[in-house]
Length: 82
Image (cartoon, rainbow, N blue to C red):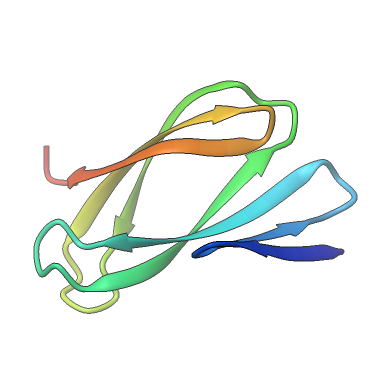
């Protein structure tokens, strides 16, 4: 396992070509900040979206992001009730 930090993003790489990327987001509903774990294959390129419940208010947050060469770019947080 290899661990490194880039700004507010912490990356843990495993030997299986998967990266766990921890990113801080702000809840769409209560505006509190919490961390999400985005598990990304190092060879995946494309768009992904996931639903994460806020750890403070429990409302669903839809997180959309793009992945290029194992790096997450362009995270957008929206209403998970859509």
